[in-house]
Length: 282
Image (cartoon, rainbow, N blue to C red; front, side):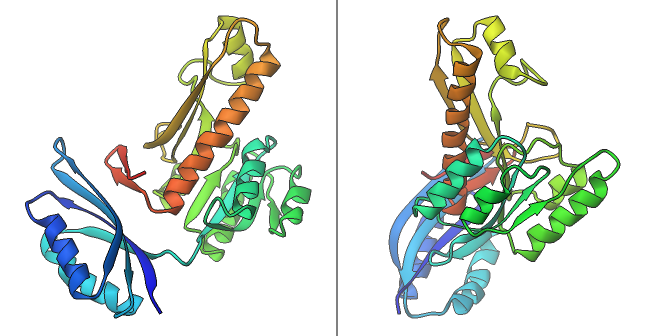
């Protein structure tokens, strides 16, 4: 049976890497179906993503041989089977537009995800979770119970084998310890007014200032609040006729679209970290 894989790699740049990778796959019966690479001249790093089919070696054999191949190049590499959807957990609070959008896209086959649990600090969306037959975990969070709540959240995330955690408008600040545990596999979404219009009612503040653009940013979660590597951003133009409710509606739509793109690219292994930036092979 012909199996399909995605190989991603990062290493110090040098001549002949593409030739070497192509030759390695060719010698093992691999047929390259999609390939992209990028040289970051500022950092001296090389990034590559290759989708290929192979029927001569098992996934275990490929991993073993890749290790010996990659070591001389100092490669940080990952091999993924395309047949398996990425296990994910979604976290949400009281605003469900992003959650609803993601679940619909998964159900429609637009996102290659296996959503194994929904975690919330409120009860609002237990019926939505049930309609998709996804376990719903209500874990209230207060200042006094934050440590215990995060411990329980991590227990669920690790127990479900989640390779991706989506903060779909989860309105709690994660501790540094939890951010570190989820490094590189947790995506957050928020409006792009930051650092302006902080705190409650950002769209009310934006309306008061007469903004002309509504935006959203999806990024990886880090201990530095809302400052993780950016994956995707989007904007929509607005004008003086928009009410606060109009601005909020545009913002929610933009957040949903931007988050869905970021989740899709991550689940397809198109996003590689480059220090505080991302390389995205769309």
